[in-house]
Length: 235
Image (cartoon, rainbow, N blue to C red; front, side, top):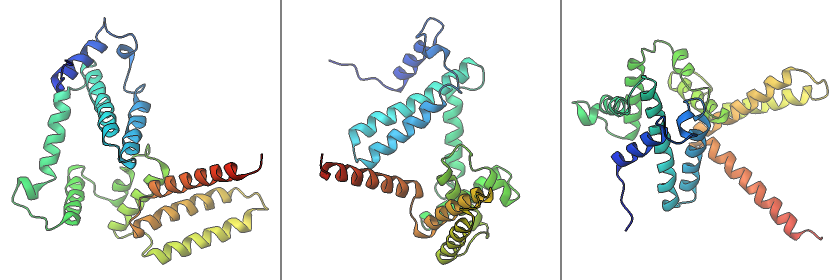
């Protein structure tokens, strides 16, 4: 009968793999060399969720957990921090940012929880300007996701376009600007195109639509239509 492994077993397996006499590949990995795998595994989790495949989701969450443990053990090996430090810090963060559960604060609904979370985070990070909050949005995020997140935070601080019609008007203005520069090969068209995408991402905030998922869906529809055309075209 197969053994059922627990978290402690998994830690010991990983420690054996990265030991000096362990796996030749695992033991030479670094935070930098593992970056791509954390990104890839995270997207595979999203794919499993989108496919409503719980068996695959279980497997992919294990792969994400592997990356967390891998990075933590590398950090321990380099005398940076321990896995226990990771668990301790995230536990303290959850307690700090849920005062309505662990303290005497209150939150009437999920929206108020998010507002409180942002305020607590702002104090923790000592953000004094909206610029500090916007700069804290990771540059490593996919550009569309980062654009939506930056605009959402700016709007919460009282800045940005007010309403979906203002966004649509701004999109139309950028389209007109691009049209006027197509034949001139103007360098400014690069900025206009960027502004167009930025405004398009902003619409998602008002529609409460995830722009990454919406674009992924549109891409899938294009691929499926392309396949349908090929299947029905004469040889």
